[in-house]
Image (cartoon, rainbow, N blue to C red; front, top):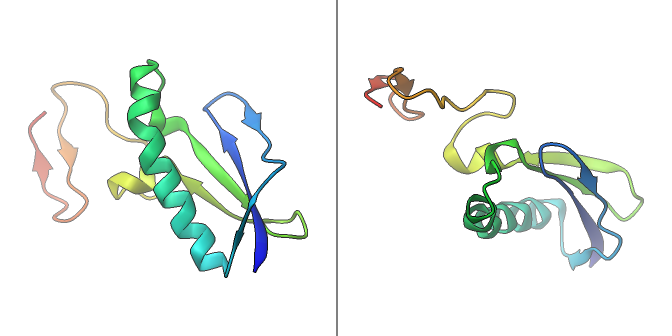
Length: 102
């Protein structure tokens, strides 16, 4: 088991994870980031914060960044692609690519 660290970005500042968690692989670290983001989504919304601006930077045991998990991945939006948030504008569904009414 190796220790992985999940630094959190809230859209403005980074919070470094100094504790980490022991996992079997980087794939398990990705799943942990996914579940962590999923668990934090409602809490962020309740606090009037935009979860779409948040991310985890996952570091390995040597402290090097392995990958960045953007919370928008929960919505099927590729990282770097902004989530549409303007009422009345057409949005594209990730699965069909067809516009949907907002």
